[in-house]
Image (cartoon, rainbow, N blue to C red):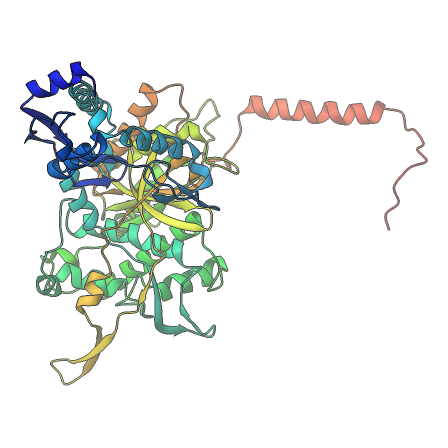
Length: 561
């Protein structure tokens, strides 16, 4: 120590140290810091160099550190780990990473280097400037769209987590009744898409019979007596049943085998899973029509929604209208005059000059029979996801009608329920967890009969919710996916179509993820006379060219064997 430093030390009676808090928790992509504290530590004057009772200068510094509780941060000396693990050069920690996240690893390394600076070398002004920069960066954070809700990643963390933990989570099961004749008692390894479809159906049923803001009771005892939860836990229990366990894995496999020739144990895609959901909802609607009860005021007795699959990436309003008003059309047919002759001329083609658009005022005023679940299977890319759809796909989660997206990584399906507004991250539930199948118990009916019902045990009630959602980069998404929207009535459906049209107008340079049209093209109608003449002329010209062309001998003529 020199004389100037000795004089400076004597004048200092106390110093202010910045102590980092111990509770720093990583929340998704954001590091939340609860705050900092300022502590005043009294430092006694250093001893003189001539006073030998304190030993050397190094020993004095060691004693000073012991008395004040200050420690130096020493870099780790451990060797770097090989393989898929790397060692942090500052603290000797090990962390895992994927090959596809090299950019994120570089950012993490920069953060570790900044944190690895010894605390004693930090200037107070530098710390204050850092806090100001971090506070200003909060204004640039992207919002999180979650099934029609918008959450701030920092200020709305608690309500967002409450919303996420209330979602239904359906996973692999084992020990369920055998799928005959294939002797399959578990769907581990092949049923992830069907489980993801169950999650989407669960969210649609929640919005249909309850509301978007509904939350299950906190206490398990209250959940056992909630009629909606009892219904949901029965609908999705893995037992073959046409009336009780309607959306079970057994019924999904039966629908895929009977109509789409998919054997149990084979993988399902988003398109096939969408048609399976449509068939099962139609099956349950037929059951409701046959077993109408007097409890018409009960919310759970209302007809289930109908499912429309827009397989061509385009939503046609007339096709949706015909589906949602088919019961009313059936009632009108007996009242119509049977002597009425059908029109002699076929329907006109939209390209025909005499084609007229049908009057849609009557259809707009006609109420729907029930609600609608709209599914749009899409393929946004060939081998990989097309990044041109990134922002628009994330914007789909901001629609209040959204019930999520069926998709995932290659060979690993997920149900996605949210995304950041810039489309960088997707939030979803992963069904790749194997849990035990729920059990059934026998109960007595009033007339002395018995019936087996699903036993709502505490373990079964806990197994359909999770506190560990998954967050993945959107560029790792498989291009094959399916969008889902729940429309309570016609006005809700029109609002969805108008929102998509508004997005298209505000972003003309971006490709639209799906289109909305008024009518399905009628390709079987008459063509106009002008088009017929053009086709006839082209055919006659082709025939004339063939007749005028000289016939040449070719030694390499092919011989039909």
